[in-house]
Image (cartoon, rainbow, N blue to C red; front, top):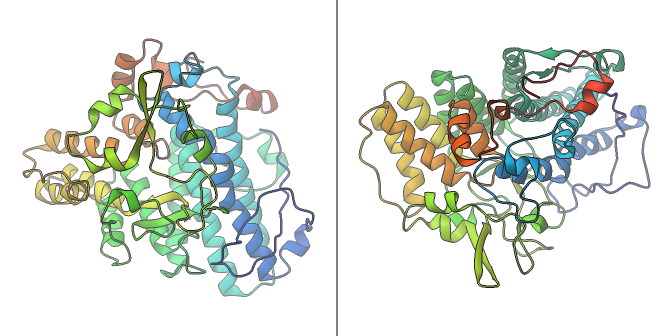
Length: 444
């Protein structure tokens, strides 16, 4: 793996809850490491710059492309794109971006943790800042390990170690994620720093633990952590799906702050006029039940030359909005209900699972379901809700199909060019060139 030079940008802050939190343009001022960790203001700026990377670089290279990789999006401009066909090249630039952007976050977190530990800053500040960095490191590793399976587990900034790093088994990566998230859960307050929901708190770490345990099929711990978030009293579903993605919505557990009130990828997903770049598939449209408010609130359409195409409209802003700003959603309450539903069903609590699913359905304007009769009925209903509730969000469709063992079956019937190797993304050839200890994923 190539060594990555981390340049910490220090920016002026008014207060951590204000509207001028982060700017990611090339700064006029760059401070050396000793200056960055000389006081809490500059150290906080370094931490906030890591948060900014998720909206600026990671989500634009992951969300829509993983939706394209599955059965959520089409790409009329380039229908033979590797993500559209499910047949990726080892030299695909977007795959490289997914890899390197997440690792840049990880390196930045490692750098922050390393320097904070030996800094002379106040103990309480160091504890909470390190806990946030561990949360962000785990968040990045979650998408790496689930996209590539075996990835290097890097917990240092030592270039000599990183350039010869070998891939770790996914079990080891998950163990580190659980450790990081547990440390974050224990080290963070329930109160959001600065008032806005743009920095991880205890409940964000708990929500992420619930997801990680779900992916490990640890039903007891996933249900426990999801239940803690639900029962915290801090969050509730919005009355309407149309309000979910507003900045600091009551459903948001964690959002990534946006400077101008719209997410970086909005101008790609929402057309100013004409044909959308990434219209949703007929398969996704057909998956909505009649009367589902999520179809009317989270999709919009554009008609050109007699053809109507629908596109994702969870985020409405594609330009500056101060009246109704939107932040990029990282974690929200609906997922915790679905996590607990799946965990309960897997333990035979069909009544509890049904109750959780119906919370989601009722908000969507759909009738409540009768108590699930068995695990298959429960699983089918829960997967349907995942598909509709979480389309066009962080590659959920890919991740959910993969973790349940359904990805190859569903996608091979949808894309003729899909093969067994497509279940994981290829390790970027560029990285293998620089680190000969990396092994390519099977089939590539």
